[in-house]
Image 1: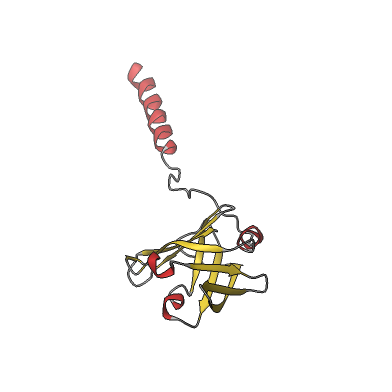
Image 2: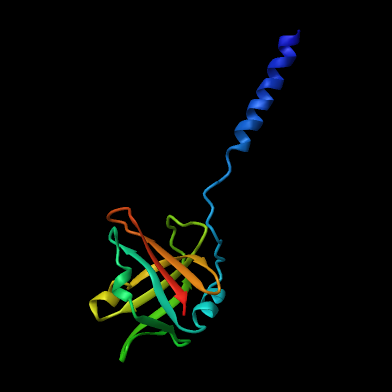
Length: 155
């Protein structure tokens, strides 16, 4: 008789244990809302520098030493290095594409036509993390499976 009562109780404890482990432990450091406005308002404020650029399995941050970036309200992106100014475009839009980052549907688009080191930034990045002084972007390289990262920090 005791075995009959003990087995269902043991089974219930087992199910509760399994149910408790089925949560997603891989959460982002800082969740980014699906609304582009906070990201746009942050990046429109002041000048920025690249503090990390990991692309094609290599750290390329040094390519942007001495550069400052200004994200204009009219989607014009300027990169300044000493007296040279380069122009590109940028935007932050809600994406309807299903990707590996299902908790975040914001795409941060950067486009430069020259010089070569700025062209490397051209991409539709996923907004991974945002604070008032830092924006971290990432992109899954479909060919290699490596995640590329681009971090802007406020000057």
